[in-house]
Length: 384
Image (tube, rainbow, N blue to C red; front, side, top):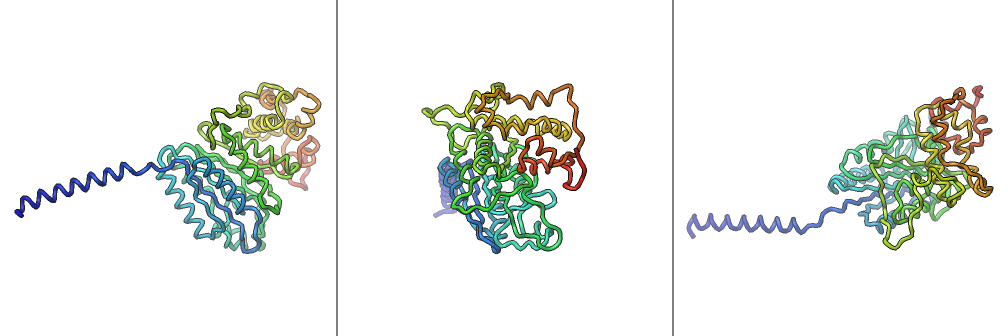
């Protein structure tokens, strides 16, 4: 065969190989934009937890049923946990601009210097300064995920639990630190910042079980699902546990779309804010009040929050069931009207825990407000 024929044959082979490669690439399915990372850490070296592994399994099954590509793991040590976070970030980047990420971390988490850390099962935290060495800072992961193009990012820490750490030196602050979600992100805790969930016998924890049920509802926005979870958990635990969430999602997000023949979803806050509480079902009423109160507590003006709390707006949520039974017309927009009151007169700050209790607030919510700088006086300090 002449050199010219050989060169021509080689060129044909290259062209054919190129066409085959392009065809194979065209046949490859696009990556699933719905991705989830679900971790349940239970077998800690000091004492095992009863519910995280089961809760993680329940949430993973729910997300799989919704079409998420779920990466699940349990009882991860430090190296495995770091690898799982790194691999998930790579998966998020490959998912494309329609990426929708759901991250559920169940186990133990601690706060240190205003940041929250998820604790691997092999962590040895003898002093508070061991936290950033032994545990994983969630803010780093959340920031990297927020920087990845996508539609929505949900991060759930079902991990505000008592722990045996930092027995030497300064003790760790209880619970999780109050944080601001990244743009395009919703972040949720199983307990309000600064508070702890109690020990549970299992097989499932009240928060994980309730959340899995809430997000399974078709046509319910994810923010509303977390509102429902907060109300249901608080009621089921008789006020002992108050979950928390904050959202900066760009728009509504549904884990399950509403079926064509499904009953209409519960009313949104926008639909109910001008109606009296007594006119709609108890669960919708609680959710609407929670959303109204969130409008007030979101303000950075601590003295205005104090005034509103002093007028008993937050106590409305605790008294709601009784109010509805008596047919009182408690308007959801009360908080908004108070915030715009031109005759507003703030109370002096800080206020004492006894003062807030006299205004009708429960101990769990007072613990939550203790995270507001300059709002709640130290126990021994004089206050109104």
